[in-house]
Length: 234
Image (cartoon, rainbow, N blue to C red; front, top):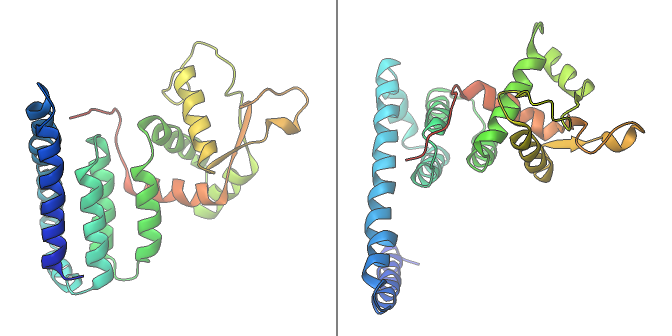
């Protein structure tokens, strides 16, 4: 399908939707403004802010030439567009630096696997703040005293997280007990963590968690690209 045809179809569809909403008594005009005018401005501003931060970092690294060289690479430009779509819909400012660092790495590094980057970037875009906090602190607590990445991976595979189902009233990894349970349950649903408590006669659900091989790859990728503390919404 030609781009002109796609554009026409998109404009026609938007026109029909806006016309239909506008016909709704009382709230139609307001709904149009919220769904199309305000949302478009918000997404545009998010994208502009991200590109400004990315450009500043690129300039500091003296890497503009790298971007110019990569601009003719179809895989890279597809990934660039993929990142911008994520940014437009991203509500948490703290994820901006993660995505910026991911894109910088993809720009500067000649040997990265774009498919690998896209899989984990997409996963991170779907993680909640409490899931990221749990994973990041999980990694930090297990990487202590490890000399290299192989030792960290071995430790993550062999030693489960324990006693996450006991409400001691003390925050674990900076999360309250309800937040911790919710984060663990969400990560289990995504196949990132496993609940192995059923293998212990004295254990309750969520008492012992271990991480999948996919989860280990994700947690290492995330650790390489993130630094933030608390969330804030626009």
